[in-house]
Length: 381
Image (tube, rainbow, N blue to C red; front, side):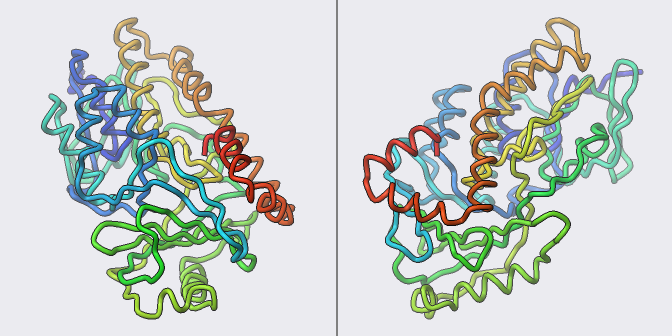
C-alpha cells in the first residue's frame, strides 16, 4: 500500500485554508480538496470578525496584512442591536473587522494558499467514501479516483462527509438554526460601517442587515427549529418577505431591489462538547459545529480550529502517533480555547428563548454605554 499524501484537507473554506497555510514549511505533503471550483458561492452573513485577522497574524504577519488590505470589503466599526423596534444598543468595535461576500473572501484565502504554499490543490472533487485502513485512510471520490492518506481533516462544512462517515454518534441537535440570506441594493437608512441586528417579537430568531461594498447589503433571517418541528426554507422565505414589508422596514425597502437568488442554509451552532476527532482524522470549522449561538458567526473560530489542527498534525507525524487517544489533544486545546465561551452563549440563548422578557432587562441595562461595553467585554461578543 502506497501513501499518496501525508494529509488530505477536505474543504477549502476558511478552516481548510488556514490549516494548509499553517502547515507550510512543516515538511508534509498536503492535499487541499474541494467539491467546487473557486471562486464559488458560500451562503453566509458575510461578516468577517476581528478574531479572524488575529488568527491569520498568528500564522504569518504578512498574510494577515494582506487579509486586512483586501479590497472587496466594507470596513465595519460598530454594531447596532434593535430589541423589538426600540432605540438601538450600539457598540463600537475595538478590533478591525469588515464585511465581504464569501465568494470574494474565500477565494482570496484560497488563492493565498495556491500562491504561498506547496499544497497540492484539487477542485471539483467530491468526496464519496472514506475507508479506514491499518495505517492509512482510503478516500474515494465521485469521479472514480481515489487516494491513500495518513490523515484526513474534515473542513467540509455543516453537512461534512468526513463527520458522517467517521463519527457514528453525532446525533442531530434539537435546537438548531436555519437561515435565509439575500442580497439587496438600494436599502434606505443604512449606516455605512455598522451591522444591524433586529430582534422581532413575532420571529423566534433575528433579522440582520449587513452593508457591503458598492451599495449592496447582506440581508437575512435566522430562525430556531424547535424540537422535531422543522421550518421549511419556503416558510422562512415568507417570514423574510413579511419582515421587509412590515411597518418598521417597508420604507427602507420600498426602493430596494433584490440581487440574485435567495439562499437558505443550516447554521451548525455549538450546543455541547462533542467528538471532533478520532484515529487519523480531525474536524474543523462548521464540521465541528463551531458557530457561536448568540452571534451566529464562526469564521474566526473556523480559522483558529484549522491552525490548532495543524499543530496537532505536526505532533502526530513527529511522534508517529495517530491514535484516537493522542488526537484528543486537539479536542482539549480547542475546547480550552472556545468551549467555555460557546457553551455559556448557548445556555444564554436558551434562557432568552424561554424568558423573552429578559430582552427588556437587557435593553434597560444597555442604555448605559459603560454597561454595554462591560457586557461585550465579558461575553467576548
